[in-house]
Length: 169
Image 1 (cartoon, helix red, strand yellow):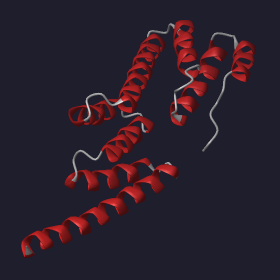
Image 2 (image 1 turned 45 degrees about the vertical axis):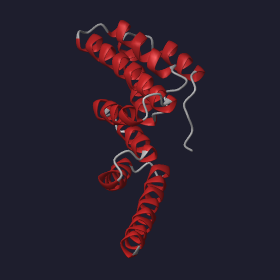
Image 3 (image 1 turned 90 degrees about the horizontal axis):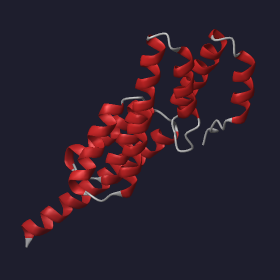
């Protein structure tokens, strides 16, 4: 009986620490301090490796930093415990799509096929569920520069006025 009580106390204390670290990670997420989100979620995951909330926060933090492979690896961890998770599936599809479009656009730009690269960047900017401010900024910056290179600056300005750039939350 005493050993059970002792283990219950340890579990309760550990649970409190876990909740505190999760709360701190959520604060850093609201501040968009992605390295701190990862640090705090990793601290929780050391002891509770299948904590879905922390895994999702870490995956999102990797996505926000443009670390698409790390994001996919974290989503794979989620799938091992929660194989039918819809939130993880949606994030995986988004990461895969953005990564594929970016890679294609960058390859086209590198091959000096600016018009085709612009078309791929437009696809990224038009994604309603992009949810990544850094990718949005980078895409808009690239579009403006690229459109200027192909002497379509006015078209770029008109087009950019039509797209939705997400506001900070």
